[in-house]
Image (tube, rainbow, N blue to C red):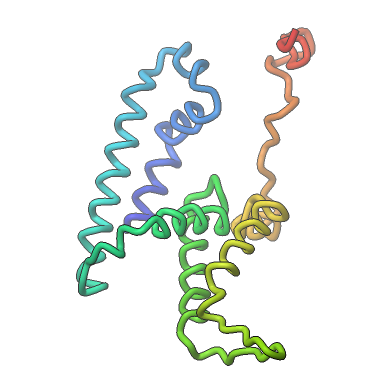
Length: 180
């Protein structure tokens, strides 16, 4: 329900304005949009969503302790979005599901240890290293994440905004002229 609501919110004019603020805040301000009002609304909306997530986490987990506030929780959020796909609403959902499933697999203790001579590779101990390496690999080799792979399969082309003309025709201000 939350995903569908947010998808509806960002697919309209409001979504276009917040994407424009992300891309070029000064231009949106120049066009007369109250940038601070949009930013405050987005901040408040995300705070409400985070509060609801916290309220719903307790019945699922059964207990909240100080370990839940460890920095790894915020790192997980960044990894979910990076692996799932930045710039897409469904990217965070895909990344969260993918990383959570892998975390359950590697930390469950069901995978057999791999003997390496005098040492043994214990998956539970190496899970965070695997997660960190996957984050680096996705950032370097697949910057659009798993969602970008879905876009490639569906032949969805995202616009490349770098080097594009700043005006509607050949006589308008070009990016090279703007840098002078």
